[in-house]
Image (tube, rainbow, N blue to C red; front, side):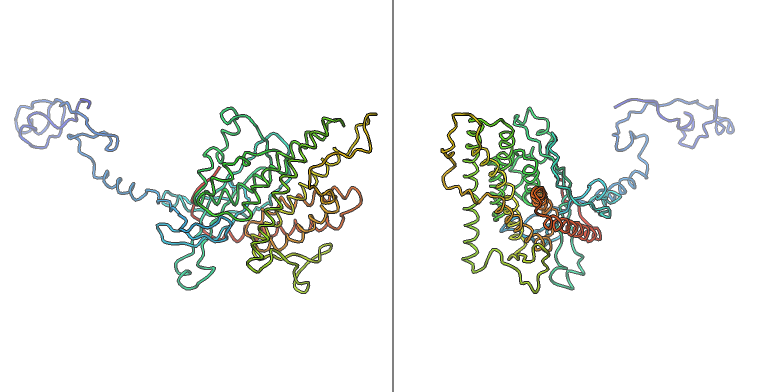
Length: 496
């Protein structure tokens, strides 16, 4: 409370008479005209007890009438509350195409879509506080994701916006089916690097700056965080680690278990639990291969082969269990499409069909991973079978290999069969999934394999096929982007 001089409110004589004063100087005209003695002027001290909200006004200076109108306007200009979407129980696996949710606006069925984009130019927020959560998309400058590994020292980074599109009420009343479904879009951008540091988090600046890793795995147990982690972040980060041949923190047990404490797992989730072990194997193999031929080098290769044999057994058990589930249900995990209806191209005229889009993606990932994995094993086998050139080496002695390891399984001819299986599966998967960027990394793996055998005069037709599929992949991305930017979106959450 502060005391300050008040306003002039008239001479003392007029104030005593309770009449209006003209505040004339040195004496007011009203007193002199009527022959009265003008008592002069003095300013009373007033005390300001107001707050910043009422502009510092006090009892002698009452608030203006405009103040209430400003408060009304400010209340009207408050931003609209953001809708919170919650998955309805029972919770379903993250890889199901449609999820049941509820919000203050009622129940919703949302179909998942994910697309790589430049978030800075693609997302446009509505103007005005009341439309802050309304979002439109500008995806006319769509560019396909480039999965080429960078092999630099930059850590993997991915950030995403979760947006929801709800159908209009009129459409949902008039029709049933696809028109009554909303969309849950994960629009994201990432780099192609995957540098790894074994320093503790408090010593590694890159770890502290990772906004996805920093909250911990328990932060990804509920919608939409769980679906972002399972459908977008985890497969992207694992592929970046595989292609850059660098370990990843996602191989830690807590990151493979905790996010699924509420949601059921799928065959793809279990597959990625095994795949995430491979980047560290690749990194160790790359450090062993350049060493000079020697007994220590062969010992390191033998130790790596033992680890590879263990991982190979995990793959075999996983695939056998998945195949058994389909046999028990009376169906097949995949089959050769009818040549009369399929659109196979040379050199892959016989393409594969699958019972679901997810099963197509599972096999694409499985076979593509084996292409890289078996090439690594083949190079390690070459190390333990080589001679260091010393006179003490006995050519009659066969090097020890892990028990049960079939050497023919890792020959280039068998790896070429796996690469062909990937290519025979890509078109079905591309036509049925709503996340076309998930196929960029498997395509890079098979293209790289065909480039390698191309040095020996082979794989020319396969290389041409891969270039053609890359064009179809880009066309699907442009089709999805133009379809998405026609809709209005609600901003739900940001990640990274």
